[in-house]
Length: 452
Image 1 (cartoon, rainbow, N blue to C red):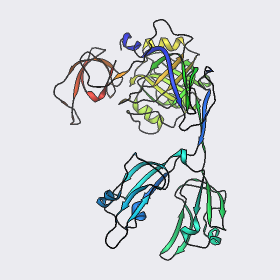
Image 2: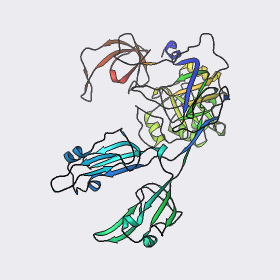
Image 3: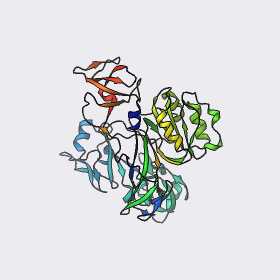
Image 4: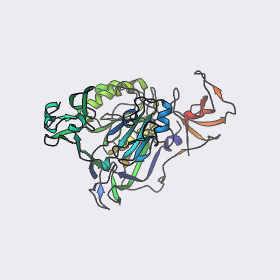
């Protein structure tokens, strides 16, 4: 990697970030107020929207339904918002049967449609979700209200999951069941009316500033805009969400990092390892309470072992881990660039905000480190380096986002007029690239990102 290219991924600029709640809530700061990464700027409480499955065969009373019949009856599309009671499927019936309709049980969004199973899944809108759900168990079991307690499988105070059998009784054709339409706690069993009251759990969201700076704008009751002079460093790949901590640099470039160098001093800090780290170092750093781990390169299998599952090279950031991991150069035994190492050594002991979220396709997003500055230097870059959308052209700078050259930079020499055939047997539009170390390679266009 050339020094010029390294510098293109480090920019000093006035950084602005919108911090938006999932639902309207309470703003905890005022315009002009100084905030640190851990400052709570907004908070809200809401009921997570449950998924509701509509079984068309049951709702429309058809008994059986072919794929073609399901297609003809469904009148909504995936992604469509529906109101409670809105018709989602309709059977016109025939000469000997009446017209039947299936309605949305809640307000929400159609998340999934299966014509083979005859089912529609609606994700409830959290903003309109009722905190208490009332189930008429007596009517569902067709029993006297006073007999409901006899058939209940849960007592008051018990937690139930959506779909759990609340009660069961012998019916004419077998057992009749009453199911929990949502998850929650049984608050009351009303034997006078045959009703069961389920209180749904509330989820609290406390939104932090993430970056240090000043509250520039209040966005109604939904969030705020934070702004501040920062040094922004883009990595190649990362996992884990937002985190922050003081920078601590351990080890030397080119060395195999010894996990035994990690001690209690890394707790609550972002560990920077210039050399090559492995899965043992990741596991130990997380165990000791490090909030972040930044290194030049990792073998992909080491990262998979650390996560306990396969990773998606197309989109990350939602992993259930306590420590954010950022790779600055690429997969493999790669040391951190000298230029980047000098920057991080200069800021050792200072607070850094990090985010491992990576998206390599449309709307590309890179894992990042954000270091606050007292002020912007005169030659500061005011705009971030952006990935160019559209067809690549000769002379453009690119970074490769697939093995075995993941993370390497180069220059497009030629856009090949004929698709190349690869070992997998696929024929793909390709480009010839001159890497920064002088090698010439041919890779599919889909496996490169072009920088402005």
